[in-house]
Length: 354
Image 1 (cartoon, rainbow, N blue to C red):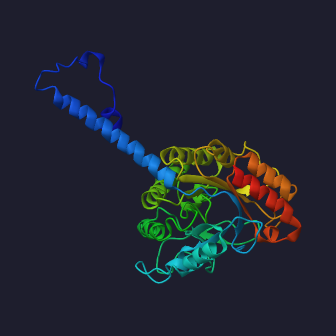
Image 2 (cartoon, rainbow, N blue to C red):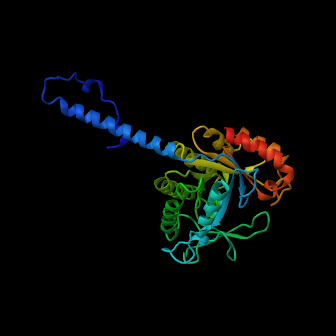
Image 3 (cartoon, helix red, strand yellow):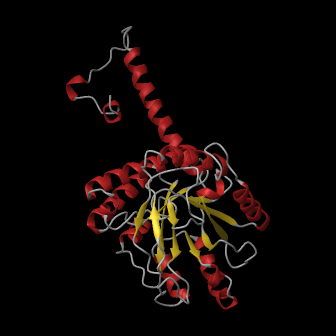
């Protein structure tokens, strides 16, 4: 019986006034009470999990900033191969444990991300572990000229190992970090896969179906193994065109409603030009009252990666607060610049006051 059928009201003709003196009256009443108790327990469990979840707020410096008085936290960015370099059964949690100790010592919020699939040719920080063999697909070079390759999260060799790693990671960090940006959704941390699914040998419909199922499995794995730490979906359309954006909206909206207060949404393109019309920003704004939401700067005030901020630091932070962000991630070069101290203090307080 489907859950909707279990809680569906009876048809009018099936409703009977009970005979309180009948020996058979208690059985239906007990069944009704049991169903109501079950429904209440499910609702209470969902509410309890949401109530226990951390709610990060403030300015978060990327990679460093433990002693920076003008930011509220640090997000540490690691790769899967940093934490499981040797085999499917051996873990090295020391990079995470060091970050946890630094956060506690300096009274900072701690965000964590573990990139799992992206790999610059020749290896690099974001490579999957060398012991995990899977098919690699070459991707077009980035604007900066970096060559990339991709291992797909639904690859039959990768998916079981990835989900097992997620389970172990969640068990190790739950309650010790203030948010976990989920890896395995796309090339690096964002949920982008590639512009044209033909690059990976699929039609658009096939690619969307596989990406959707893979994302749902990763989201559910985090939900089942995290109780105090929110898990953040870094939103980027997985494929080019309208189909990719529609797939993003369906996956994120469904998870936000399924796991209110626990599943979070972030976008990494904050600039002075950011507006709610951009679909990932729209998702941040739509769910900021019910779910953890954040933004990351697209670039620094001086620009890099062929991007510019489109305005001042304060104008970009204004755009972020207008979108409803609870926390905003900022690059170290701006966070550590003494000229920005007053601006950072002002906006950190605004975010914390929300």
